[in-house]
Image: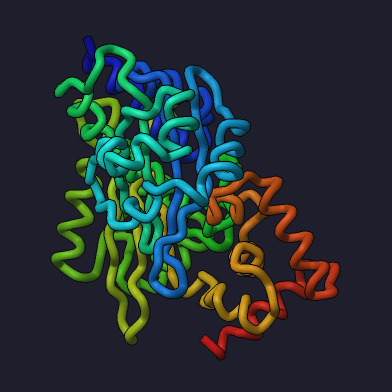
Length: 379
């Protein structure tokens, strides 16, 4: 029997995992137990340059541990011939499918992926949930067979769908941090980040601190502003939406709020700012007795690289994967951040980067940045 306490613990740790306060590996047994399965997987996907969906690696978690060997086996031996993959391209946000429904009756008898990989790992009768988060970026959250009964119970489905908004929040925040080259940094280091605006709010929603990037945005009062210590928007409707978002993130009588995102319009035909509001668990009081209640990430799309990886492939002679790594690094991400974009292991991204340097005949990151960003005007 699932309890509300179990669900709350998983949700709290999802929010903590998003900012690397805990690892996903420490969370995976809690997720499996809550859903009632022995395995789950995360598969990242992004829009390709021609509008197609590019499915990349994520992670596979069996029991209480991460299993990169299983992930490697699937992508090396089964992915290219898995009949289900093209049918996942149209999986919508919040759409739940039963794995057997992705295979025809004939394929259920002949498919190597279905009869070897999924049968061996007891994921043949699993479920897959589509999650759209950041623009052009999505996640397929898959779970193995039910460990409680032959099929799936309504209570299990209800829990899985209840996790949907929180999994979406996890993905959004991880993408924002990857874009800002800040996947594995402390809160203090986030305040020093030059690419990402960060505003810390106390439990009552008042501004505790803002880093230099966010302070500069607030000072200009172009869309987002500091209204006497309260974060606000210049547009009346957007201000009301922001206050509703902050109220959900900072409920007065609950230890765990719900995050969300919105856009803040700006003048002079500039692209809108993107806000990601991320509640944090109750922590020790600050010097003034206040408690940190939420982080507000302020994303300015102008800070992102505008080079299409397809241009890099076409003009610099790199493979699509090498091009995505090159664009990610040129945009200020670390190798770990580039790995998240590709949905692959950090070692794989590093190997792609070595190939990029070899093919371009360069040795320094500054040279790579110059070569990639020189293509911006061709986009």
